[in-house]
Image 1 (cartoon, helix red, strand yellow):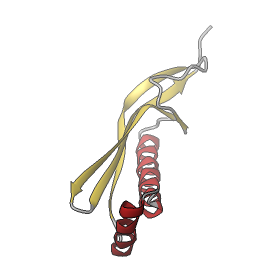
Image 2 (image 1 turned 180 degrees about the vertical axis):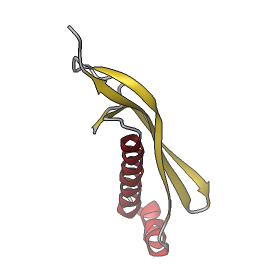
Image 3 (image 1 turned 90 degrees about the vertical axis):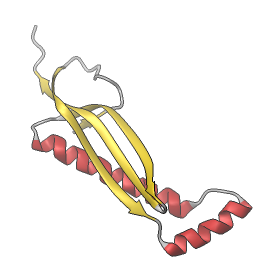
Length: 108
C-alpha cells in the first residue's frame, strides 16, 4: 500500500478516487507510567512512556485505515492526516484519515 501526506502521487501513474478511509484507537495511560511522568514534569525532558504510547497508537490507527482501504479495493492512500484528541481525563484518541485511491494504467 502506497501512503503519502501529499494530495497526489507524482509517479506518472493516474489514480481513481475511491473514498475517504480512516482508522482510530483510544488509549489510556498506565497508572505507573503516569506516576513516573509526574517526576519528568518537574525535572524536564522527554516522557518516553507517553511517546511510546502515542507511537503505538498512531501505528495501530494507520493499520486500521490501511485495512479499510484494502477492503474497498484501494492500492494507495493520499492526503493522510493525523489527529490526536483528549476525549476524557487520561483518554486520548488517535485518528488518521486519508483518501483511498486505485492506480490506473497511464494511457499514451
